[in-house]
Picture 1 (cartoon, one colour):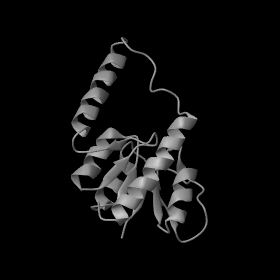
Picture 2 (cartoon, one colour):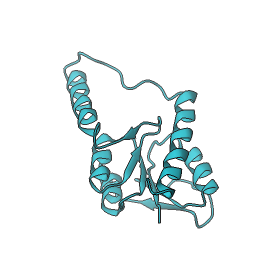
Picture 3 (cartoon, rainbow, N blue to C red):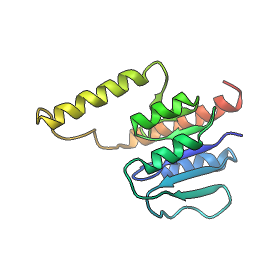
Length: 150
């Protein structure tokens, strides 16, 4: 059974996730550090984990299985999920793969170091409507691919 997990703290595409999983008659588990309002129904579940920077990540990484889908911006979490043969999609519609996760981790580390020394300030580009559209398209396609065994 295909499961969808959302690293829900600060996830900008929760409504889009609800829309797509309902259309495909799937369920979704949102994992967060604090209570979030979620739609009623047995297809959406909220797991509230204890405080701690990696508590939600740890819960997802321990529970995800092969061919599940994880929605996250957290690159180390993406790596942990890929190691368990899950599929990982960012809210901007980028699918992380075994082929590119090493580069993503290295880029994350480099940017973190540049911010620490003050060479670079600021963060990622703001979330835009085109990101939302790309996410919807890629998420729907990913579900269809998994349902077809790809």
